[in-house]
Image (cartoon, rainbow, N blue to C red):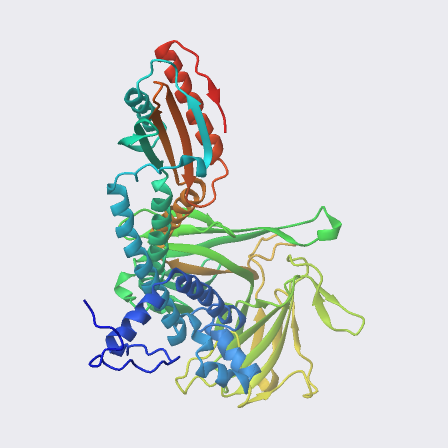
Length: 563
C-alpha cells in the first residue's frame, strides 16, 4: 500500500515541465536508425528514381567508355565547360563515384527490404489460417442461410473444408463454446500467398539484374573495326580501331577467329519519288574462320547481328573507300590503298584523309571529298545528287610538312592536323584543288609526284566502278557474358510482377451455428488484403456451391435468407 502524496516523508513531486526528455541514441542507436531508414521500401523506390535521374547525363554528353572521340570533340567545342564536367565525372557517368554510390545503396536497400519480408513470408506459409471472427456480418460478402433439415453442423463445416480446398484455399477447422444456444463450428480459409511470393520473386530478380549488370558486365568488352571489302579482321586486341574493355576484362578471354568482309550491298528506293535515293536495305556478306573449323559464311544486317566466337557482330555504318595510288617523281609507288571516306550527308558526299609519311621528299597529307554522283550547284560548288555510284568524282587538297606521326602520339586516321603543314592547293594558294575521276592521274604540286584515282577492273562494264571505289562497313563487336542472366532475371521479374498484380490475397470463413430449436444457420464472409473487387462474388459463389452440396447430400431444399 503506497503512502498518500501529502505524507510527511513522501518525496516532493517533480516540478511540471512541458519539455520531453528523450534518451540519447548513441552510436549503436544512430546506426540502427540509419539501417531502418535505408531498408525502408520508400527509400528503395526513391533510390531507384534517383538512379534513373543520375543516368540522364550519360545520354546528354559523350562517354569515354563508348565514344572517346566524341569526348575529345566535346573538349574542342566547349573548352570552358568540358573541364568542369570532367571534374564531376560527367564523361564517365556509369563508373563515377556518385553513380556507384547510388547503385550500391539501392542494392543494399533492396537486400535489406527483401530478406525480412522473405522470413516473414515463410513464417506465414507455415502458420495456419487465423481463427474465425465472432461477427462475420461486419465483413465483405456476408451471406446467411439456413441449412437443410437434418444437416449436422460438423459435417456441414467439413464439407465446406473440402469445397474450399478444391478452390485452392488453405483451411483450418475450429469449434467454440456454446453461443446463441448451441455450438459453433467454422472453417477458416485463406489463399493468395502466391501474391507475396511473386512480389518477392520480382524484388529478388531486380537484385539479380543489379548484380549482373553491375559486376558481370565488367567481364565483357565492346570494340569497333572498319573493314573495306576484301579486308580481314583478326579478333586480337591490336586489331581493333577502338576498344572499351570491362573493368575485369583480360585479353586472354578473346576467342581467336578471322572475319572477312566479302561484299557490301545497298538497295536504294527508285520507285517512290518522294523517297527516291533512300537506302532501304544494307547487307554485309562476311566469311568467318574459327580455329580448327571450316570456313563459314554469313550476312550481317542492321538489327540482325551475327554471333561468332562468343561475340555479337553488329553493323554500325558504311560508306565508300576510293582506291588511290601515290607515286614519287620517278614513278615508284609509295602509297596505294582503298581509303574509307566518312559520309557527310544522305547522298553520301564523303570526307576522307590520306597520309603519306614516307617515300617522298616531304610528308604529304590530303583532305579529300568524294562524290558518288557528282553534280555542281549554281555557285560551282560540287555535291552528290544520288548516293549510288553513277558519276563518281574525287577532289583533293594537298598539304606538305609534318604529319605529327614521329612524336609517337596516336592520331586519328580520319583527321589531319595542319598546324605544322603548308597548304599547296585550294583556299588562298591560287592553285586549284585536284579533281579526279576513276582512272585519272594528276601531278602533285612542287614536283612531289603524282596521285591516281585507280580505275575499275579490266573488262568491267562502263558503269561498274567496283574496282575503283570499294564499300566499307563499320562493325561493333560486342561480348556480354551477362545476356542470358539478364534475360532470365528480366523474365522472372515480369512473371513475379504479373503474379503480384493479378493474384488476389483473400480470406473466407464458413460458420455453422446450432440453434436451441435444432435448426442450423450457416454464415459466409470474406476479407481481402488490398483491393479485391471480386471478393463479394467469390463469397457468394462459395455459399451457392456449398448450399447445392448440402442439398444434394440431404435431398432437401434450404430456405435461404440473404442479408
